Image (cartoon, rainbow, N blue to C red):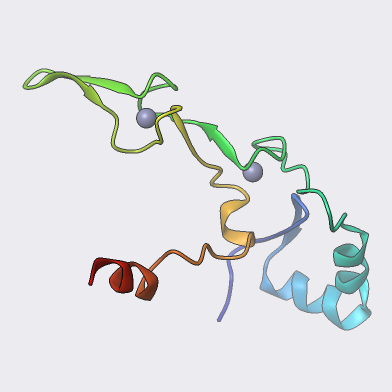
Length: 106
Ligand SMILES: [Zn+2]
Ligand SMILES: [Zn+2]
């Protein structure tokens, strides 16, 4: 599987070829080892918060539509925040998706 671009610790590494080169030279391993293990790394986009202000409601959690007036925003949580798109994909997947949801339902 080819990835279009890869971030390690919030640092842009490059495309799949760059990652392979870094991996073969051992540099990739060094980059990963440099990351602090106990703290979330500081993503440039969200500053390590892992959430950013929703761009649909601008953090108000309310959107206005002509038909229904003011309603809750579907995109963000109650605090008007969404998962950071920059670091969401390199973080471990949340465990509450897919099969776990099904088990909860039944
Ligand atoms: Zn929103
Ligand atoms: Zn982030």
